[in-house]
Length: 194
Image (cartoon, rainbow, N blue to C red; front, side, top):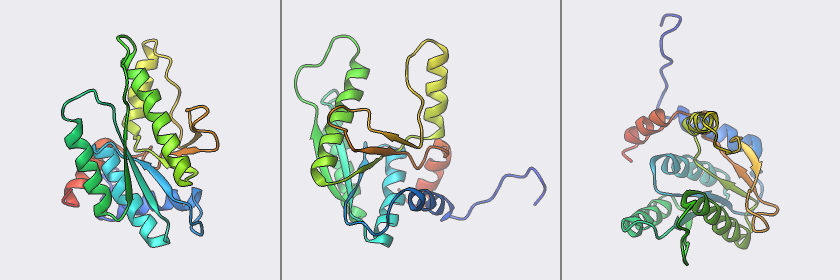
């Protein structure tokens, strides 16, 4: 291999990197569940598979939480897929629903706030102190692009308090995929047959 050639990775490299990040932040000797936000998209599915392997290896319960915002007719199918994926890796799963009226303006921000509240409530009820999310390096780039155009989004960090208040009190968010690129995650999922 020449200097500057792309680094070739084995099929377990992504899982090993995520496991290392989880090892640095989470106790292996804890019976409290680790919660995971699972939309059913590629980023959260890669997180589910890698975190599921870590949880099984350390005997930690994993609780996947899926929010149906009731905004699209396909959401029922996505929720079913998320449930099946979570159970396939041995995780507990809960479906959460954002019911009630939706605002005419600011729907994206309202949906994000509702999602954080629902996930925080469910995580705390289950005894979790950490919620894993599938944000990637691409999410950082997108947020930076939006901020350059006037958006007031906060910066994504790998470890931060839950933004939901009071529902998220005492909860931390961990983003173990934050340095990974979305394309690499998709390639890894393809290798896994997912």
